[in-house]
Length: 308
Image (cartoon, rainbow, N blue to C red):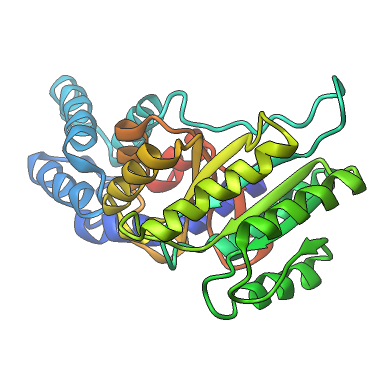
């Protein structure tokens, strides 16, 4: 557990640095004052925590400050952390594994989102994470639109020793999904993870392709896909909320993965995403290595961003 928290702390180091740079270390040992509270407000806005969350954090710290003018920085940080944890109650997505009831059909996870969000690398990392958990996994390279996307996923699959079904650039993505499901079923795989092409909601041909992939998979298993997750780039901050809204409306999302959080000072957007969409956050990307994709923990996140 400590090792997992360290990953969160390291992963959100830029967000922490952005806050502490503005607050000039008010979360250190010294007492806070009115001026430092104003600075904290600016820092939380900069880190993309949004109006609602920032107001809640400040209200509770101010209430504690009124009772105790000697309120220390670390006490204020603990209060802020508890507010975040409360705001994120219910946000942790839990991936329940296949059950032994009925025929052994693979659980299907479809990853969608816009270009550049990190879907392809996340597909491979998620497969590796499930493999470490003792699950058998098949990857489906259904991003046949972007040049080199198939080769990228095949390279990851080779590196992580994961089975993959792939075709060539320009191939019918739904046909690849069809073949991949059959292969996953034949091998008795627990999971089939489908990487899809990055798309904007304005590209009707690619949105139609998503529907086709779903229809093809449902010919095998009417309950599939069991998970439809959007992969959002955490460095986009609150802009990622609008992306998720559009895809949720058109495709029906069941959760999300937030990537690239190690490279941004805007890690506060996770709270806004949850508040706005109420879609569970299953995993977060905290680095480039396979093990840097981690199950989302509201407690670890809340502690990490306040430097606790």
